[in-house]
Amino acid sequence: MKSPIDGSALGMRGIAIVCLTGLLAACGTSTADNSGTNTASAPGITASSITIGSTQPLTGPAAPGYSEIAPASNAYFVYLNQHGGVFGRKILYEYLDDGYNPTNTASQTRKLILDTKVFAMFSALGTPTHLAVIDYINSEKVPDVFVSSGCNCWNNVSKYPNTFGFQPDYTIEGKILGQYIKQNLSGKKVGYFYQNDEFGLDGVKGLDDQLGASSIASRQNYVPTNTNVGPQIAALQASGAQVVVSYTIPAFTALALLTAAKLGYHPTWVVSNVGSDITTLTGLLTTFSKGAVGKQ
Image (tube, rainbow, N blue to C red; front, top):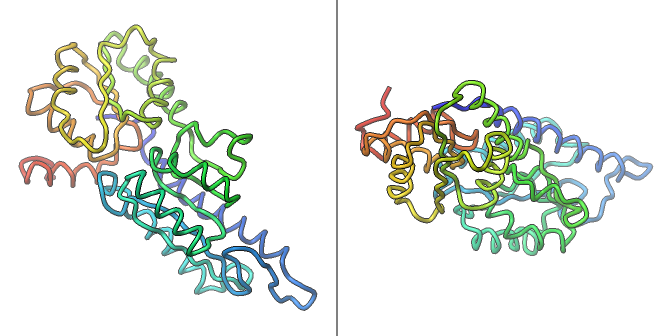
């Protein structure tokens, strides 16, 4: 299994947190009176705190590899608060579980905006989940910063002026993976296995740009609510695909690998950074196979 851009997600996450702190600091410096007292008045902002919120897959199919992100971010904010906060204000980070389910994301986001009254949404995770709430967040004029998804959807300033992504989009990543295949796996038949939403489809656009849409032996997709990927992997095998490009969350990368192994199918896997973390996959392979594979 190969991913030419492994290791980028953690670094980008750190950059997002540092950038958010800088933005909040800029807010803090502009809301003090002549006595130096914080005087801001806005939802989620008091003289002593700034409240931000997020929806995260703490449970559900995207939890493996991603449920640790919000607690890690919060650990930094706790550290920051212990050292004076941002110009005297503590950062209060409330993150709610949506189970990677857009319906849950909608209700949890409304809770954060209407009940908790967050100043901003920070690092809300997931393409299908955040697409379910982006219109609402922008209608409420809530800052929506560092969305944890590489969807092209966030690059629409005229429609979503309050939403800001931060990571290279999936189409750019698809072009990088396509270039890698052309340079290192030239002449081999290629198939796709991807999530059937903007996450997977944006990646496919980039791949097709480099590899040519007509050259692909088989295109197979999945939805996160159906863990039976047997028919898709069998179709890839039947097509003769020697390389499978996978735009999958970690759980479905693991399911695809295990299913292929059961079928005696051993292509070269080229996996998006979203679903290629080795530590996460090792744990999932061990769990899903009940210890038969994945142990080091």
